[in-house]
Length: 87
Image (cartoon, rainbow, N blue to C red; front, side, top):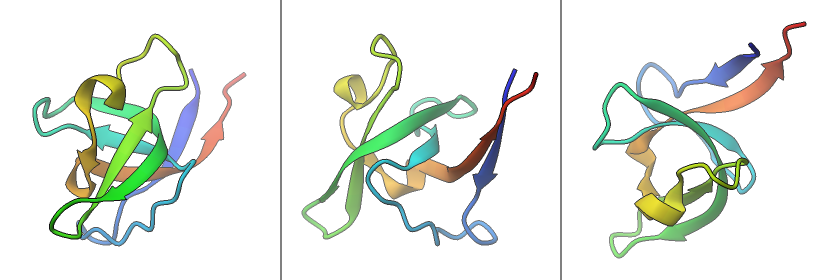
């Protein structure tokens, strides 16, 4: 099992600066308590000018925005900084 080092906002506020290609931890509003690790592949602005994110699984058979659609920034809980491989 590998370990992930994740940056979680700043004291609960959303000060994460997200970019294309970032790997993020997601907790969907419709599935509280279940966390996903996905990669940001698109960033768009909604009608209110808020960023929304399209995420994809590195596993082609994984569940992602192809099923869910775009996610709000509130559903992104953190950004993966590094992966520590356990030997």
